[in-house]
Image 1 (cartoon, chains in turn orange, red):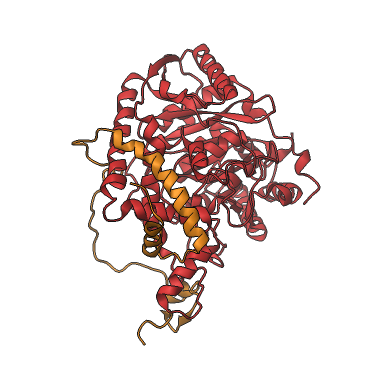
Image 2: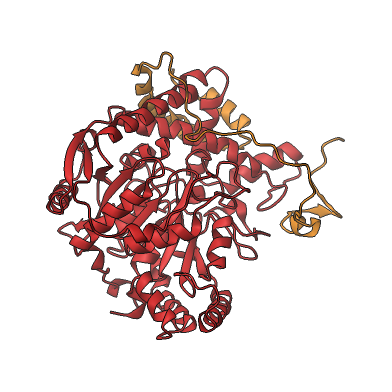
Length: 95
Length: 493
């Protein structure tokens, strides 16, 4: 499984990265090398082995649906690149 | 010895006894920063006024004997990955340009509660992705022992600042060795606690199943003291453990008679620097001299650690870093092409090369058609690695390994080759994948005078054993008492 330039362009799209032509070339080469290195995993027998995603048991805990203190809107919006009243403002989506 | 070079527990006695004030101590550290940091560049932000205000408050607490802890009045610095209310937090990235968190990370809240003085925010590889601190979007940090070399990473600023006495101790984070490897390369002590022991709330996420915060200090005792104060269940972090927090310091009695130390053959490989091998070999004899029993153990899946790590960590990162979209905080690049275009431009300009590389690799390994072969396969091998440790710990109480295969490398040396850089973490990664604790302590110097580190790994939640053996080793050796020659860093501020 060797990664191609087209794969890299596709991943860049999924990753929401506007890569330059040079970046696409560089990443194709570098990812090829890295993926070649990790290929060694395919030689490990993992039949019937459960994957580990967390090393601790994760429990789904319920909590009471109670109102608790949270960040006031003014604080939450303070870092916004652009805002309109109490909302984050983004470029127009619908023409 | 200059007062700033004393250990934290020694300074705590002076503060408590009224021999020195927190203000005077804080001023002394600020002077050290002024003298050398123009060249060393461990700090991204120095919190001068804020620190002095906190120092005055600590002095009041000390005078009135109100809730004094071993960190009351102590100038502590933070890796710039911890959110600090009202203080710029960059995570080493341009994408967080101008970001001022409206809240404190739980670790910061606990340090402040204990009366610590937050003196500044330390340099790091962007989003903690790197092993040299050269991936900082702002500037590289130098190694205090040799300004031509890297301090390690990603908590390179945190290790360099402690080593050169620009703070008493610092808090770093460790996803694949980012506390232990720079601690080794800078000649200080670095502790990565068990996954889930210290809250991750407010610590900017890289790989959520691996990230863990911990102390970097000039001695084991300071790490033990700090861990007690920052550890413990936090309802704001759903992965935070309901586990007892110990008075770790009270277990440091120097007695390791009969303790079984496992030596994994897989860690003494080709490519291990001869001076590292020699120093580690000598430290085994020191430990045997103290009455410990060394036994051979095997961790057969070690050779897959780097592969597993770079698939798991990048997959998690690609998801975690999706939040940087130019909408709620940080950088926005908008050239009028609409929303999607704004996302893409913001992320392309805001992230550095290594971060983009890892987002791409992670996105690839999670994407349709590749998920089974990459992310899932890596997670299965992770299970086998975890079992390796469980097996090994039937034979021993702690495991001893080198921390890093080489001493500090030269600036720029590994920048163009990501894979070689990734292999710098070969001995530290398994610990994070298994979720167990690890500590690095100084164990010698190369002929050129570069520090070397020894790593102890412990059972899940058994911080006591690794702190105990690290402390006993430290007591029996003089390495941790050496301080870097700062002459080369002076006068170019």
